[in-house]
Amino acid sequence: MILSYEIFLLLLLLMTAAGAILVKDLMSAIMLLGSYSFFLALIWGWFGAVDVAFVEAVVGAGLATVLFLLTLFGTPPKESRLRHPPRSVTTLIVIPLLGILLLYAAKDLPQFGDPNSPASVHISPAYLQRSYQDTHTPNVVTSVLMDYRSLDTMIETMVIFSAGIACALLLRRQTK
Amino acid sequence: MIRPHDSLIVQTLGRFLIPVVQLFGLYVLFFGQYGPGGGFVGGVILGTGMILSVLIFGHEASRSQFARKILHGDGVGMLIYAGVGGLCMIGGGEFLNYSELEIPGLETASRRFLGILLTQIGVALDVAVTAVSIVFSLSAEEIIEDSING
Image 1 (tube, chains in turn brown, yellow):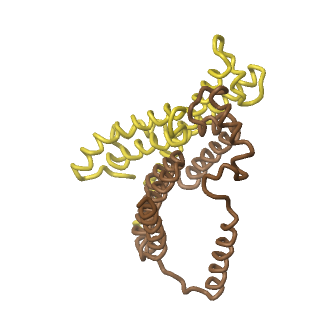
Image 2 (image 1 turned 90 degrees about the vertical axis):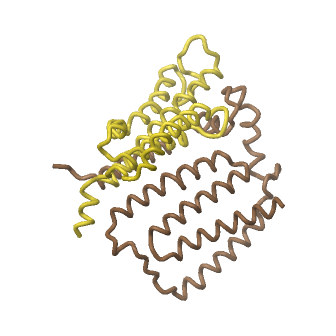
Image 3 (image 1 turned 90 degrees about the horizontal axis):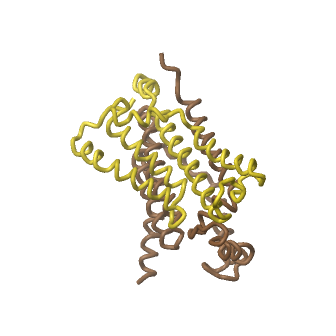
């Protein structure tokens, strides 16, 4: 029963992703992308990555959709229809090959939640054991992001900051 | 330029929903150390609440004036974050080593707790203001009118 729920979610994800590519006008594509982000958030919540699910739901389904819509309203109507170019032979050969290669590589990935996988034997146990004594923060994700890896987070914030400045410099014009 | 939305339903729901969204943003921001959430998500939710008020009530409404006022405060969050790092250096430690924050009467772990909280507020401010600023940039009057005229 649990498995069927998962498969249903994955099917919805595939359908919205394919729909966003195949659909004819930009408005429907934006709406489908928003719902795609929402289903992705549900799947991440299902896997226990609640923090990631939170960000996906708020940024992917909320903020990004608003930004896309505002861009669309600034686009002339005749340019908001999508024209699909004919598929070339190279695409038809390369993309399935890439898919096969990725599936072949996925065979070697560790099992989901495997305690002996390389990612969870190196430094994660130290974080999990020491986080509460070090920082009095029960949520280990937060203490890793903002304390142990604080410099990374600062540079990420700087990236967002520069994105805002770049948008303002490029899009805002001097009002009379 | 965004004009106020015509529908009474949208306006009434907006009046009711925007404070709830803002309150939830603050909750996510300050409980990020106890549950899922944190500075980034909290900041985006706060920014989304302000964007919602701009989308529903228009650029000129009194409810949107707060978003307009903070529009140019992009650097404040960055300043708080880097400032906490600088305070740690003044206290004699490395950049962003919160245990060297000079606050008397606090043990090391509590200092690091406080450091995490302050930097999270910095991230939230930066992200919220940037989200509002990008929306204002995208909906600037001249762009929309240019595209309508040809």
